[in-house]
Length: 376
Image (cartoon, rainbow, N blue to C red; front, side, top):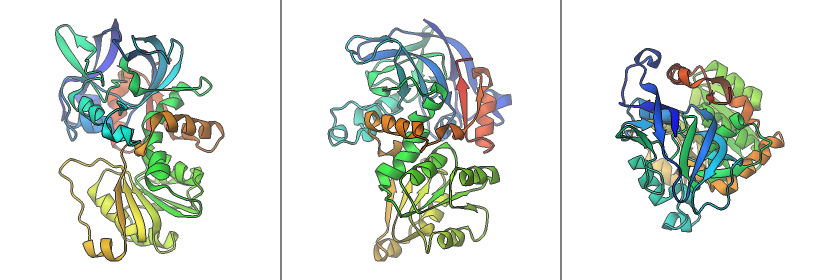
């Protein structure tokens, strides 16, 4: 079938993208789903910094590629071997497919699935297939999703079924922002009621972590960012304190607001400097968690004496250390109960044709989460 998709043909285009137009809206051929694959009509797809890092070339991927990885939609057709999804089911896409059989999967850590990581790196589906073409030209998949398109064929392992009573534009955010941000709090760090939290970097993932910390019962949640608007939103969402990251005493402010340093500090800015500051905001015996993805050559200078003598912990968190089939439904239930107001993270809805300008807005920090709306 012919579909309309945003295709990236080369990385590193100059900004603003509204002028350089790195993403081309093209008509491409989408094959029918093969075994263990599903055809999904995309309803909404969120713009994320992980997409931006492919566009700007900081995370190289095979080109050309139909990008987008945070989305929700409706099942149109299930391929052979898929007997637990049917046409009409609502689904959230998960950008890290899990085979269920490799060592990490067998240990309950599907976010580290080895075949899934290999497939994502090659621009293939977990099945090893590529279902996108333009004439004789192969169009690679982005993280198994290629969600900036009106339809997508994905591995069954890239989908989680959800209830139909949650709007699909809101549901899209659960595939990345919510899984990563809330998961970092409740799965990676295991924040307990009464503990203190600081969050550095208030994009969609960081603000989801603020919501997750509040839902987990953290006594104090301090939000840190460069944007006054995002700091105000964090405060409106329930953060007990906010700190301008530009302030020369930002670290001291966070330590004061958390009683000498936070039990857990989360870094989502994707900056080595931000992670270094997050480490300094953490209390003795505390834990610094990072889910930011800086350029591959970025390094963290750590005072080893403090790491040892203060019994510090530094942890990475990928897609919120999630088990998608467990976590997505749980987080959706929290949203429906009013405890995870994820809808407040949406800055607006745009048509696919405005996607380049949308990434300019994401880059300059003027939005939290824009959603490409395929529902009209």
